[in-house]
Length: 79
Image (spheres, rainbow, N blue to C red):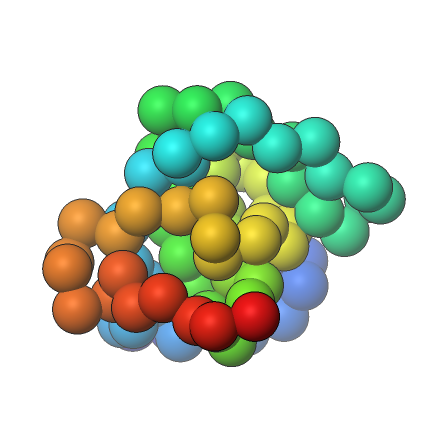
């Protein structure tokens, strides 16, 4: 499934739901500020940052602050 947005085309077939596990305040307008318990749709995940969608907003969010519904997606990265 392809979705057209202001940012361009997105492949929505790989979207994964995830819960925010701690509050986070984005440091610029490309990052999302979210609260613990929010649920986001993760469009892309590069291991450190995810490109997410929530409430008609898109932006980057740190993967370490997310818990995915699918356990296989909850892989820890050594920093």
